[in-house]
Image 1: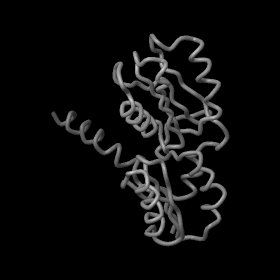
Image 2: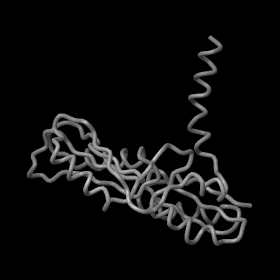
Image 3: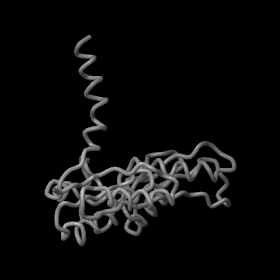
Length: 192
């Protein structure tokens, strides 16, 4: 019973651990190059080799983290394919693509993710940022004098950064997130 309780506690604590802010030095080690992405195509009955090849070729034009969702059985004339990109994680991009696809679906089955876009040489990290946020971190944020903070919205894929204790970074992020109907900004990087 104690082992089960410890396992449950570890499972519940895992998302909290990934939500804690890191400093610039740690963030630099975790982030990926902002050059291109690669597609991982789902093995589904209705995704043939030609579609898989086209998805992989298109991945270079889609900023990571991204996802492509379709509704199996939706008429091809509807041109329903939800592509969401430039999110801070595959999970957030997938959720956005599914929500967008299902909101526009007129028939057919519930939408499914047929491809995800990640950075080249991707491996799970406690902190992941979109291409745009990674570029801002490398080119602008790191040049700011501490104290400074970078805040992100997982649901909207937006971010904000500024000098100070994090209040201005959160405000910038919240303003951008509100435009997309989200309110989940949090400090991801903080330097004292």
